[in-house]
Length: 213
Image 1 (tube, one colour):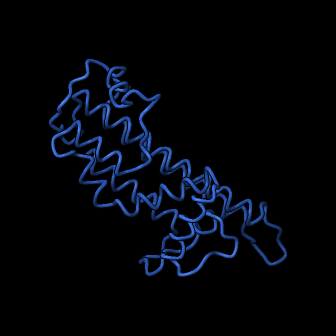
Image 2 (cartoon, one colour):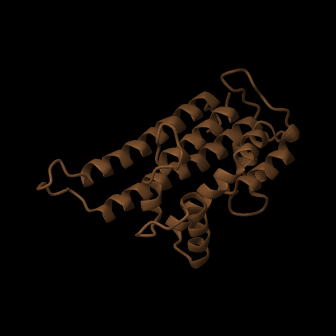
Image 3 (cartoon, helix red, strand yellow):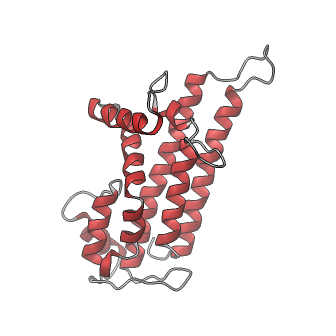
């Protein structure tokens, strides 16, 4: 990673977002009926499972993006637009930077945007460029993390948080009550209409563009 440039990190992230969108798009194509008599290649249940996979892959790419961009900025790299934050720490190499960020644990976690923001304030002046991007999108990113947990863990607490998000957004739960069913639904009042999956991926992309200008 140390030899990589921030521009290539952003480019790879954008590629992975496109791949997640295509995976979900394929799932809807495979589950559709060309005619009333046609048999879809996959069921709606299978489609929703693939949509969940598409979202999970996008979220994992978002976490990887945060980690890579954070470490490269900490190593003194500059964005394609010429931006470089003021650092408080100066690790000599990637290995040392990774160890510092882990703070004695096996690895640093990047799913919780508030935790990432606190980490940014410890290492960069005013937490830039992470604080501005994460704080202005905190609610959406927190919801995305909760949906990620619902897909990955299916625990009782994850279910409660997920259902709270769905009720807030839709006023009711989808018939199946799955994350995939919710992600495939249209965001109310969105113009033009977009699915929740595309909404969250778009937020990841806009945040990434602010982090690497």
